[in-house]
Length: 397
Image (cartoon, rainbow, N blue to C red):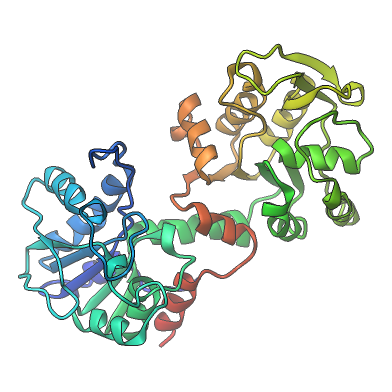
């Protein structure tokens, strides 16, 4: 995908003295007292901001935070804690500006944080008048918030339409490159792991991947529905019997291409959904009516690990069992360690997946960890994200 990149503009000297507007993703979790509990997104935004400052630009940064009501400011919606943390990370004052749509006073070599962009009326509906006002604030618009790339809003899409120059920041550019490497031009075999509680929430993803991947590993409640489709008993496990036909269609679509959806040969069951429930390993065809499947079994995990180690590219979205409970975490840990040990290029995304990566300490062994939940899922569905579309359109002139 051809988009203009901010790093190229900096190298060419085009950022010097320019007013640069960066749409970052600073939507960080906070406790009840407004203290930031995890600052990964703020730290991830710093390289782009620092590059703009070092290039001599006048820098404006904004982001959404939470789900505020447009036009109604509440202290809990303020980016003030973010401004304080950003000041610490940059080693300089980062003033917070409210009511910024009609004008921002910032000089070259300075940075300001613009208050929560979702407080602006018309933001979510991509109001054209609002987008044009934002675009008028800057010489260069930089989209560096992949987590919002699937939304066409005024600060993500409209401003890119109307700004003099619109480009991808380093975070967004890295996502574009990783997604292209994993899905557009993958080294084969391409193996995708799609897990979650419901087939219905990821059916379009499964259907899209079934046309492209060499192996489609399903996990969690999704795997239970596929086990039903394969004629296996699942006891009282979470599943969607009404989607068995869709699961069979995915299996057949894969088989027609010489690809496969590996069905578990053994599972870990319990009679209760509790952390201290007794875990029992059973052959897949032996699950009793009063049991629920909470993880894949060791034989299945070993078979899948072998496939992952032999893969050329791996896409990972979702743990394959209830990994929050240690008794039902072995399948996900085996998968995670196999991905870490594989020479394949791997891309992982989704909140639970990131939690599993952190739990097993394999972040350095995954090729690329996506920062966007919903955006990552839409890419897996085969959708063109609005942010990618408008930046490619602007690059093409």
